[in-house]
Image 1 (cartoon, one colour):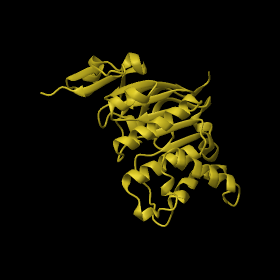
Image 2: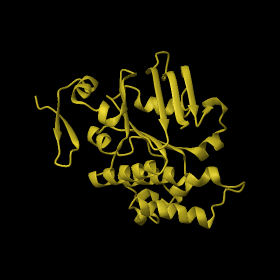
Image 3: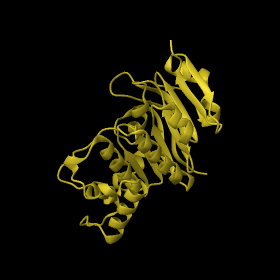
Length: 258
């Protein structure tokens, strides 16, 4: 199966000293990769480098079998969706209009949305359980509501690859679970996805694969059931961890009380 994303020896950062120190990552359809690691270790830098939002100094990035530099921005936006960590201005737009911005790469010369575009946007809002936000003015949206609309905007692009930077930030537990469950359902249907997360248990519950980043390097990567182990998490975060098995068989992780 052709890789949707392939990085080899990626060095990238914001100045003379790279944040990423030679990261290899291959993502295919039906895979949801969780990227875990301490703050400042390069998780967001990895996604931004892949998208060309910051230059990398060494290594290669291929998206859907083509080198990143050979992609036209509009063409790439039809195949790869980006759910950013930071919010953009929402004032003056309704929730539905914010989601419909995800259809921009697919629109014609005049940028007019069709009935299909509107129906698709409403269907995604319904899928995420936030259809009530369609008519909500942007200036009345909470941080969590904006986060759900950003995810809806990414899904409405109908991408082959979805890149998510902290998609569960600002969300309550129910919406964290709901958002990742819908992403995982799309992955099971053929989407490929990479999500920067901070919650190890959400990664264990929803990811198929995991990349552990520390000091800009891959500490470990692979199928979630083999990579997420107590000893590796202790090395990743530098603190003692506990692991327990739930009645369902799921593994649960927590920092050990000192």
